[in-house]
Each structure stands twice: as structure tokens, then as C-alpha cells.
Length: 406
Figure 1 (cartoon, helix red, strand yellow):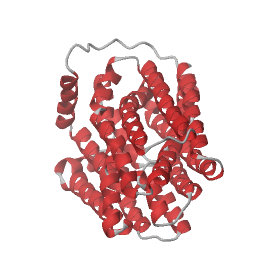
Figure 2 (cartoon, rainbow, N blue to C red):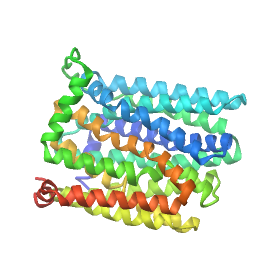
Figure 3 (cartoon, one colour):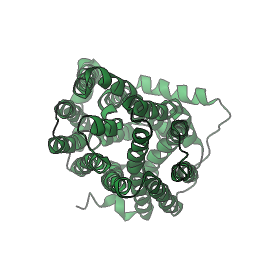
Figure 4 (spheres, helix red, strand yellow):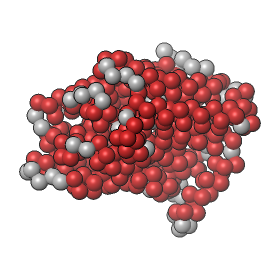
């Protein structure tokens, strides 16, 4: 308990945790409400996949810019500015929906803007963790940060699902936008010592390629980033496509789709809490074990046609994915990365959520041809194959598995 409570002794971390939980609450609402809006406007799972894809393209394409900016500017001000912009976009969609003039191209445009903003936000937000705590408590701080994210994901989807079913999409969008206001005020109260500004006169591409070169030369960074990105692109694409899966295969309404996302959030929170009890010396072994469990559970989920069986399996999936794989990968990289390039490494790591948004379009398109069960199972198989080959098949992966973390 003394170890688990370590990060909470810093008031900066408490404000940071509140902001992260509120942002996660908004994001948990955001993906369900935007997805349901697409399905109500078009009724097409391919259009749904396209919207998620349009979110993912700038999310991936601008991450190198986001990582460089996170190393160059005041991260606190950057996060606040981005939160304000995201709230404004969501509120604009709410007005369009309320007046009855919302069209699919409005949603396309919103998806592109939101994906761009998230690419700039995430490297800065994640890099702030190491600015708030010392290395001794970093693993626990990352676990608590991810727990905040998952608490938001637990509460947000079922709440917004109820609002959609009992009121309207417009009301759900307004609720979504208002959450970002609370997040902005929480970040405002964080007090971080000014970092020395890094020169930004060199081209962004050069700073990014410098970070890539250092990753390429480091067996730890390269191996963990490849594992995380393959897990995100193949394994986690089902999460971005979940509203369409629930609508199409399970015949679920918005509230039931929110309950599925709640199961993932609860599982992720359980997984995050369990990290505190994992041995710090063997983080890489834990990462490989959780990747294997994830692929097995994802295949079981793909073939379930019962809502409550799917809910239960999705709970376990949450434990084995965002609950453990993501914070373990993040912690290994934070510990292995020098402070001066941490923003760029975190930016490259955050290609991972971008890839699972990009993967939603081919997954949804394949589901139209061969069904959701087959398409998700193939994605799980590819994730497992890459994890075994890159994580253990190469000498660097075997050496990491045999070497204590320290």
C-alpha cells in the first residue's frame, strides 16, 4: 500500500490524474457518440470504418510532429490549448446535430481535426508523467495514470449510451464537450518547473529521424515499439470498430454498446491495479505473457454471439490489453529512454492507438465479406504471429526476456 500510494503524495500528480480521468471520460463518450451518429446518419458499417480511418490518418501522420513539439515547448500549455480545441469541435457538432443539418461530411471533417489534435496531445500528456514523479515511483505513476484513463472509459460509454437512447445525440455531444472544460482547469493547477527550451530551428523531420535512429540502435526500444504497434494495428482494431460490431453482430442498442465498453474499462482498471504487484525485474516477460493471453481472448470474443458471454470475455480482454500490455510497454520505454528524447519516443509509441484506428476500416470492410468472427480472428492470429517472431524469435527479444529490468 505504501508503494501504491507513492505518486499521490505529489499534488501535481493528483491534479494530473484528475485531468487524465476527465479527458478519458470525454474520450470514452466521444468514440461511442460519434460512431452512433455515423450509424444513425448512414446505417453503414463501412462508413463507420471510414470515419475511424479518417481519425487515424492524421493521428499517425502527425505524431512525429507531436513528439518533437512535446520536447520543445511547455507541455502544460500545449495540453490545455489542445483540450480547448477538441471541446470546441465537439460542441460545433452538437449544434449541427441539434439544428438537424448534420451531414456525413461534417463528421468526416470533425474526425480529421480530432485525430490531428490527439496526435499533438498524447505525446505531451504521457511525457508529463516523468516530469511529476521520480523514477522510483514511475511504474506506479504510469499504472495510476492508466487507471484514470480506464475509470473514464468505465463511466463514459454507458452514461452517454443512456443519454443517446433517452434524449438525443445532440445532448450526448454537449455532455461530451463539457468534460473537456473540467480537464482544462485541472491541468491549470499543475505546477511544473520550466524546462530549458530545446532549439526548434532544425527541421521537424531531422528531430524525428534523430529519435528513430536512437530507437533503431536500442534493442529494448525497437523491440517494445514493434510489439506495441503490431498489437495496436492488428489486435486493437476491434475496439475502434466495437459500435459497428455491437450494432451488426449482437443487435445491441447504444446503451448495450456502452456496457461492452464499460467491461473493457473495468478489465483495464483491474489490469492496471494488478501491475503494482508485478515484479519489476521481469517487465518484458509480463508483456509477452499478456500479449499471448490477449490474442486467445480476442479469438473467443470474435466467435461469441451472446451479449453477456461477449461482455465477460471483453472484461478479460481489457485486463490483458489496455490494462497490462499498454502500461507495461509504456513503462519499459520510459525507463529506457533519455529525458531529452522521451517526447519523440512517446510520440512514436503512440502510433499504436493511431494504428488501431487505421485498422478499423479494413476490419469493417472484411467483416462485410467474411463476417466479424473471421475478420477479428485473422487479426488476432497476425498479432500473435508477430509477437512470437519479434518478441522471442529474434536474439534481441530472447536476450530481453532473459535479462532482469533492474
